[in-house]
Length: 172
Image 1 (tube, rainbow, N blue to C red):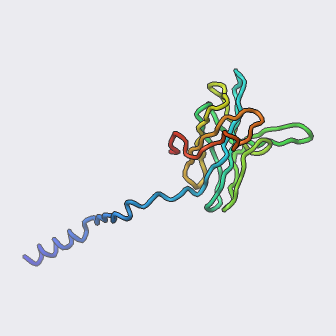
Image 2 (image 1 turned 60 degrees about the vertical axis):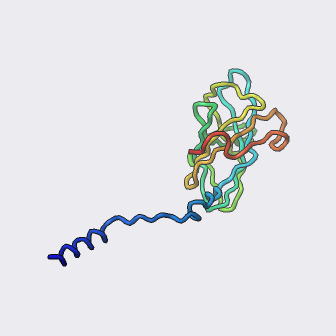
Image 3 (image 1 turned 120 degrees about the vertical axis):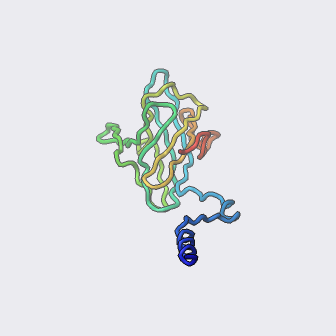
């Protein structure tokens, strides 16, 4: 009888969930750097009453191939990835339903007359000095929070304006 109780107790202990307590060094290790980094994020001011604006950014992919598949912005109702191209002297814009490819180890610049971020349904005009908060969404990588500086016409990123990765809001 004692042997049966001992056997049952042993089986119950063996079937109990195992709890692993990580070492202090594992708890203190820093979070890995994001595979995709953003630099030179910027936008242009809009006129009063404008319902659309634009944002640009350079993406550096330090990981495997990925895709920018979506964007959220704090200044409009909708943000989309678009392509601008000139065909027979006529500028055309179209949404990129599949987003923008980011090759492994590569850099892609969203820029005027190329892929860019359209900010539609603006809730207010974009003004020089303002920061536009963007959340970039990728097929595989974690979302990335970016601040785009609204620069004066003719100004280039890095001329006292520019952008920061991370911004004031989380990347969700």
